[in-house]
Amino acid sequence: MLLATLALLLAAGPGTEVHRTEGHDPVPTRPVIVGVSLDGQAPPDSTQRPPVAWQLTPELNALYSPRRGFGLGANLTAHHLGWSGSRWRAGTILAQRYQRLALSVYSASPYQSRVHGMFGLYARTTTERPFFGAGGRTSDTLSVRFQHTTLDAEALLGAYAFDHTGLLVQPFVRVRWDRIGRITEAADQLPLLDAASQGSVAAAQVESRTGAYVGVSFASDTRDAAEYARQGWLAQVSGSRYLALDGSDLGFWQGSATVYGFLPIADLVPALRHHVVQLSAHVATRRGVTVEALPFYYLAVLDYRMLGAYGRYRLTGLDAFVTSATYRFPVPSLFDLVTDALATDAFVGVQLGNVYNRIEDEFSARVSFTSDFEGDGRVPLRPVFVLGGSLLDRARSDLILTAQFSLGTERAFASEIRLVYDLRRFRSPLR
Image 1 (cartoon, rainbow, N blue to C red):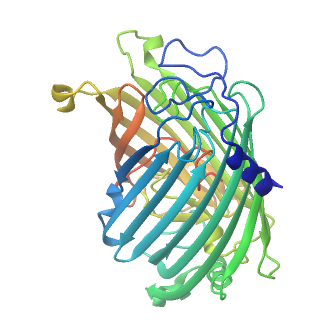
Image 2: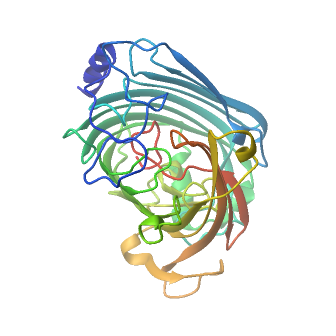
C-alpha cells in the first residue's frame, strides 16, 4: 500500500503547501513549516513549473581516509525535474577500499509541502568494515575487519497532520541485503572477543541476509530553519519491525527517540545576536533478540556522527544513548572581505554517551575519563569535547560545510559532520 501510494504521489507531483516562516524573527508562537526554497523566497507555485536547477557538490570526505584510502566523490542534484518541487539526487564515492552509490527522489520538499514521498536506492561495498565487539566496555585496540556489501531500497510517505509542522506522520519500508565476505584484517583477534560478540559475528557470516524494516516515524518541528536553526525544537520518534525475507527466523523490534533544542542567547543578552546553545539527546534500542543472534551490522551504532571522537562503527550494542550541549557563535573570516553571501560560525561543546547490551541493567550516569572501566558491571558514559566551525549561506541559513575536531578518552578525531540528523532524510541514522 505504501509503495502504491508513493507511486501515485510521484506521478501527481507535490502536495499542498503549508505555512512556514521567513528568517529568524520573531520566535514562532506555534509549529511552522521550516526550510526555504532555492531562491530563499516562497515555495514554488505548483501551477507554474520553475526551470530545472542543477547543483554539483563535491564529497570532501572522500578525498582521503586512513582506512578507505584516496578517493573522489560528488553529488548531483536536480530540482523541479519532471514536476514542480521535486528533488532528484545521485551521489557516489570511489575510493581504494570503499565504493558507494546513492540515488534518491523526493516528490516535494519535506519541509514545505503538506505531503511528501521519497524513494531511494543505496549500494556500498568495503573491505574495511570494523567490529570492535558489542557493548560499552570494548577497546579500540581489539577489532576485526571484514569485507561487507550492502544494498538498500527505501520508501517513505510523510504527511503533516495539520497545516503546520507540529505533527509529522511518516510510515516507511526499507528492504536491506547484506553479505559479509572474508576477514580482511586481524583474524587472530576474533577469538579474543567476548562470547556474545563472537556469536554476533557468526550470525553475520552466513551466505547473506535479506530483510525488511516496516515502521513509522513521528516528528514535531518548531525550528526557524531546517539546515541551521537558531531557535525552536525538533523531537523525533521512530519504531519498526525487522522481518526476515531469506527464510531465516530472525526478527526484532527497533526504535529510537531524539530531541534537539536551540536556545537563542539574545533573549537574555541582546548584544549576542546569533549566539545559540544547542542541546540534544538520543536513545536507540533493539528488542526481541539477543546479541548472539543479531548480526553485528544490525546493532545500534555510536560513532563520530553523534559521539565525535569515535571512528566509524566504533561503538555498537543493542542500545545506545548520547546527549550533548554545544555553544555556537558567529566569527569573522576572510569571506567577510569578499562577499556578504557567506557567514562563518564556530562552536564548542561536550558530548556524553555509550552503548549497552541492556541499557536498563548497565546504564550509569558516572563519567569515565579513562578506557579502563572497572566496577559493578554498569557502563559509564564516555566524554567527548568538540571544537568546530560551519560555513553557511547567510540569506537562506543553508549549511555548506561543517567540520569538527573532537577529543575523547581514546583518541582525537577530525571529520565533516551534520549538526542535526533528521528522520525526513534518505537513510537517516535515526531510522
